[in-house]
Image 1 (tube, rainbow, N blue to C red):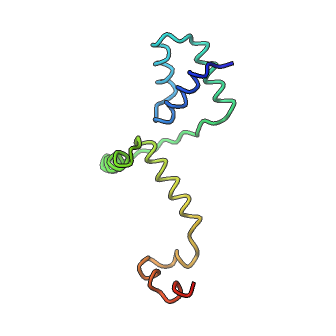
Image 2 (image 1 turned 30 degrees about the vertical axis):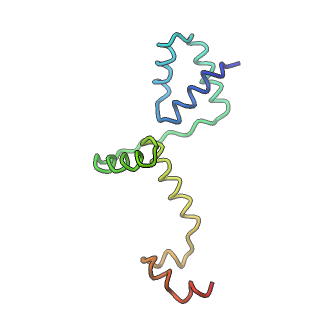
Image 3 (image 1 turned 90 degrees about the vertical axis):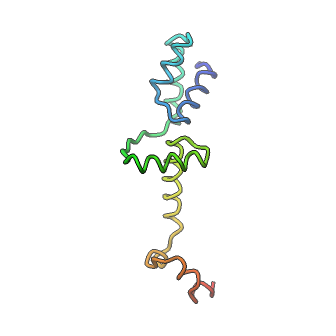
Length: 117
């Protein structure tokens, strides 16, 4: 059975955007036995709760803007990117064919068709 404190620490590290090797190094530096650390990682693998990793490359100015947005929202940069992606995927499901053809939301809001609903 894995140590619950180690599992909790690994989950928190992942949530904050740290890589597994960074969490592992920190736990080793604090004196945790390597077999307990590996057991905690195996416990998380078996639950398949770990998100898939995607590597993206951003221009510095884009990364800076995302960083400012993350700071405003009290997120880390990876959390902010995940939030942006999640929101864009969810908004895809809300669109209808008619909305996609209209470029200006202002026109859609004041159209007669919208008032009939």
